[in-house]
Image 1 (cartoon, one colour):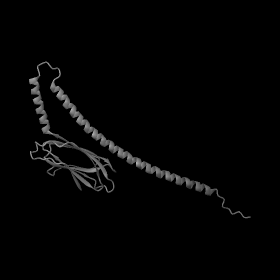
Image 2 (image 1 turned 90 degrees about the vertical axis):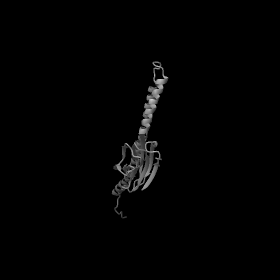
Image 3 (image 1 turned 90 degrees about the horizontal axis):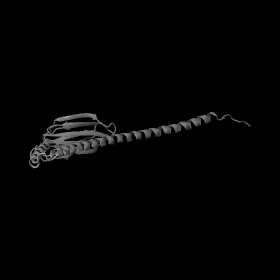
Length: 226
């Protein structure tokens, strides 16, 4: 079993003060008969979303498990091709994500997974910034002089930002779907080419046998005496 560390957060200032780790996208090859685990550090009182897909390999399935820093098994799935799970609120510590291909003795798997973090601290900071911005606007803006208010512009920008982030996540998942479908199509194309070649070889052999049999039927085997 192989273990890999994605990030390790320094929690010296306490779980609430630790910033959330950046979102991650990982694609790796899981050999046949192997189990690999990834450790992801997380602050407390946040939200963790884990999504995975098997995009290559026979069967397109793996076993998946997710454990909390205290060792509690949160998710356990068997022979799945994809999945999405949310942990909220999170514990401060290292979460353990494991992908198991030990049931396969021949085929390796190509696995993609993504980790998305949302922090409650960020939401509180955004609310505080909005309150400070509102106070500044009230002090600096003359009454009934601006048609477009600054808070409306800030709200539009925040909405656009969240939609762009969601679009990036959806595009990443679509790329994973596209890679899985492409690998499946290439595998099917290889099978079709192989059996087409086998059928062609059988047809050629049958054609030669038919010609030989017909020729042997019309051969005159009688002995001519002079």
